[in-house]
Figure (tube, rainbow, N blue to C red):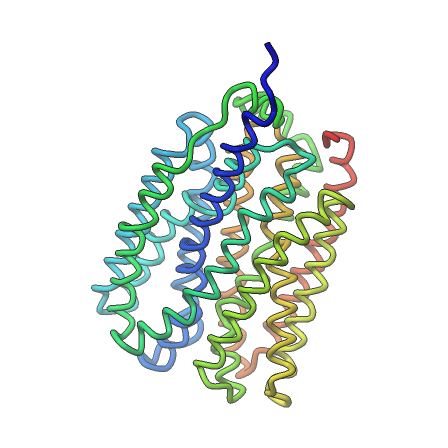
Length: 407
């Protein structure tokens, strides 16, 4: 007897909601680093390059862990894998609260927290959502799930700023560790599960074995890795340095945190709206809108020293929302469409790893250029170059993958 699709719709909708709530916390904590970054530079006296290195090391271990998490998801399912990831996040934040030097933070936040974020990151979470949805609805489903990241920035960036003011940065990290243990751990362990075998097949996950020889011979696979490498590098360069750049232009930190929060609020709507654009008009079209948004955000930061006014800050938030609303969601949707037969956990975990490498290199390079030149101008040019390269690679993959996409 054929099962009614409605039988799968309700649990699939619950999975999407749980993923969105989880990413609300995970990325709220992650994106709050821009406030901690400014504190490290101003209060501790560390250089921009050294402070950005904490985040870059975090992203490097994120990159190393995400593909392994994807393989584990294909084999064991989300509950044990994400449970381990949240525990590592909590441990890394707790150790960060006890840090007394830059070296301590490089280990606690860079290594331990980075491994936890790699396991619970966008790629592994996207694979769970993709496994519960058909390709024709995948862009919207991932967009709704990833909308939680924007709301996380809206809440956690101002919250982190308040906690730092109240408790200093070590106490703020301790509070965030407790959030992981008390809220995030039961949410992910109890709220997520792998889809039934029949639904996984309809979602396109035909195999859990990786055909490495086939993958490595395909130019489209290497282009997809390039998309992953350059997708989040420019976004995370902006998110890490945005508060410091605004402060350098004379904007108060509380105002800067509010702008970041506004960008997060708008990003939530951007994820959903551009997910609809993706399913209706194509992944590449949606990604192009996001690329234009990032270029606009970079332009607004370039204008700040000469025009630090409300209009420029609001435009920056709007452009950042457009950019953030497509980079990770559309890249993982494209990966799921193009190579779903390799196992959704693996292919999206691999994309998550490439996200991490780009997100590690971008902020560090922008910080170094800022220290050497005294301005963010050269770093903004690097961001523009990464955006354009990602756009060209995305269109190449989208054209090659069009015939593989189910309708």
